[in-house]
Amino acid sequence: MEIGQCPQLFWCVISITLCVILVRNVRRLGGAIALAAVLWQSWVAVGSGPGGGGRSRDRSDALGLPLPFQNPSPQVAQGTPPPTAPWRPDAATLQEFEAIAFGGEFSRDRSLQVIRKWATDLRIAIAGRPTQGDLETLERTIADLSGLIAPRRIRLERQNSNVAIHFVPTAEFRRIEPNYVEGNRGFFYVWWNNRSEITRSRILIATDGITQAERSHLIREELTQSLGLMNDSWRDPASTFYQGWTATQTYTDRDRAIIRLLYDPRIRPGMNRREVRRAIASP
Image 1 (cartoon, rainbow, N blue to C red):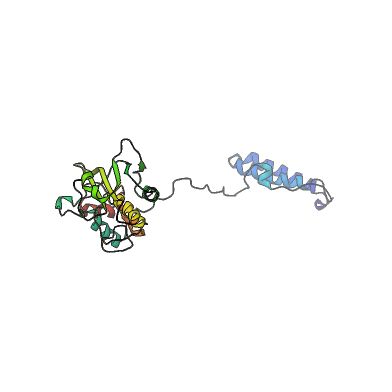
Image 2: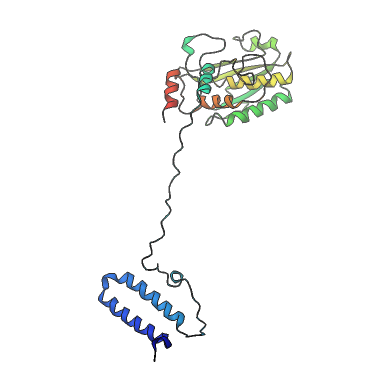
């Protein structure tokens, strides 16, 4: 009988031979088992002879074992994503930030040449007679700032407030705030402690002599500057910080960058220009 005519006998001989090798080579037990399993699977597949109904299967699926000499699948590294580089403003933004954040619009006191900012949340109380447009503008401004000064938050709170916004005629400004400077339709005044942390502010918005669009601009400007950005600039007429008269009611990209920089955790109250630049340059 030819071997080719009896595949079962052929595979029985091969299997017996492998069993002998297996016994004599115990150290290679793992590989021998896998190899014998493969041959056994092949024998089962052809065991019914020509015309048989055997169903072939993937060997690793059938046996639950890796194929001989097959490298295991590499494990995907599990871990945190690589840290991103700290945000740094461009040179023009830093220059504009220094012009606005140091000093004060109505003061030349050199002792004020340090960073001043809030170290607590802002709790706003409204007084006077605001229009519906005033209230909507204030709501939009608060929403815009909330994403820029984190972790500080701003909310309206009648009791225990530390920010008061007065919507009154200009003639009442000085009665409400003795430090008011004549000629302004919008005005803010802030207080800070010996650590240069702003603790309280008062904002005046005129209800006479200006349009709603102009008043809406003043609401955004005075609230933003009371965060610690107390100077104006002639650089960009579209900016909230523009020195000239304007009715812009949105922040420019640079405005946002300046506000974000002031409340960057690396920038601390009391820092001077050199310390700010060093903090930004550090990782």
